[in-house]
Image (cartoon, rainbow over all chains, first blue to last red; front, side, top):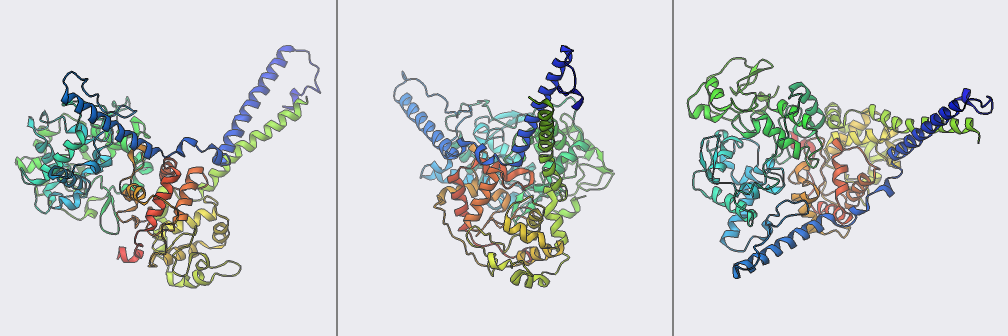
Length: 391
Length: 243
């Protein structure tokens, strides 16, 4: 700077002066920005920078607005029921445009309301309330956050109006009971449960869960394709997906809760708090979440818990690929149909991005046995100690 | 206008401005990664006999006062001084290190932690983790307990706040090392930490999980949840869980 000092040098060249002014201006601007950033980072502005709109009770206000909107909707519906000339009720939606479900706390005080509340208990505490049919550490609400209410987390108010439906997965028309049966078979790994199978058909678990879903969805249009349904997978990135990049994402964003071995964590009461992502306590090879695209959609919108949307599409795809590159309980369709692993791979895993039947880190994925490069004879999915499944 | 002086002033300002955040980063580098710190300290603490540090906890040493003089003879806490009994050893050791490194700010605790050796921190962490003490906390912030219970059990997804229990365990007794017990914690302390995360005075939370949550909670929510958690049964001793 000193050689540009105006006191020492004759001011002859106007071009140089302009340049000097420009340089000083840039330096001053950079200095101010850096000073401001530094002061901000030091935290001294924190008390005054605190967003004042958090001081009002935002959570409470949003809940009250939602309840009010549902009451309006009920009134509009009653009016329409009484008088077909009245306007049909408009869909009850939040400011963000998502369907506002009924609140379970408002379920009626009658037999149906009792069923709704039981369904809610099964959904949020599946480990206890459907314990005979759960063969891993999962609860329904692990993958359907907010007890099945959160948009982008496969909310049940959206699913409830989408069945019966034809599903490519089993190539038949599925009722909601069929769909729940599938969840228990695959996501809850019923083959490893005390009963060895999903809840018996036509049983109360199905009825109560369906009452709960139906109640939440009251007012949603059939086959609604509502915004917020499913997990809405982001497009596969140009770079594709990578297990090694995913490992870094996992270590930086996931391991603190799910453990470096992906085995999840239990609390002092032995209850699963962070679900296992692979290994014996996780969903099996038939669950939708073993597909890299589906897991990427869930992760993108919902993980880390409370920070949904914070990972990039690339990170979501990469970490989904990493999580699903480890061994997990076998695909129950292999035993049901008496197939080899290769046949199971061809019949059920060909058309989606997944690692089933691939050899990764010298381990053939899908045979339920970690660390073995060759196919093992099918064995029932009896639960094993989780240490065996970790690396 | 003297350009030389002006530009020198700004150059200095630039250096200072850049050095401020860099300085804060440098302190962090002395500590293990937030995600793994509690587990690393817990593994180290497992090698230490907590009985060797009981006297230090109860009586202090030299010009450093004892832990018990503020946290109570049973580690039960008081006012805005936290309960320590039954917190995980890894979590306690992580906080002591954070005080010593100036990452977590509290003048009393920084003074104390600065004078402790690493082994003493680990020993004290084990000492309090293995302590089982009845609750000495009660709701005292005029919080709405029903709202607090709702936040603890279910969170509030309208403001993207997960349930406390979804990370701190089904009784808020903590989950392994990184997620401390919140049950029977002194409500003024819990409230004070939520406020500190909101205004940036406290920063050490893995993935900044608590900063996000604290920002989303209103002042009334903070009082509600701090009061509700204070009403819960106290956590058991750490070794009664693991062995």
